[in-house]
Image 1: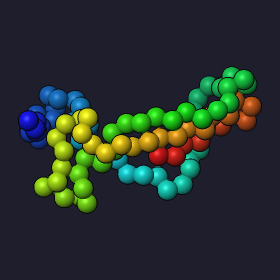
Image 2: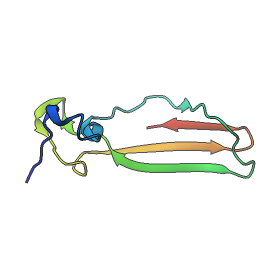
Image 3: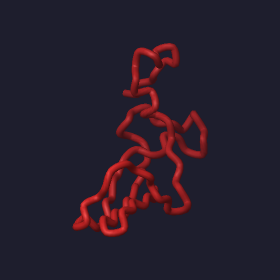
Image 4: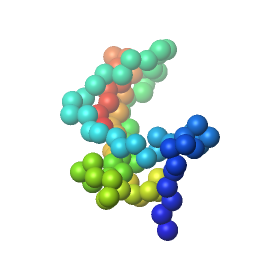
Length: 89
């Protein structure tokens, strides 16, 4: 069973962007942030979440549930000593 979201309901349903596809970033980017990172914090965090919800930008091959999209893997390199966070998705 597929569910769809009527565009007229976009203002009522705040999660309309759940079905917007995410594109990969080709290069690693430095994230700007406020505050400081603890000196002892250094490592890599991987996250998995929703990515593309259609194949080849063709709406006839779209998915209509938030859990059915293709995976989008994100990588965060966190370096406390240099106070940098780098992202690639």
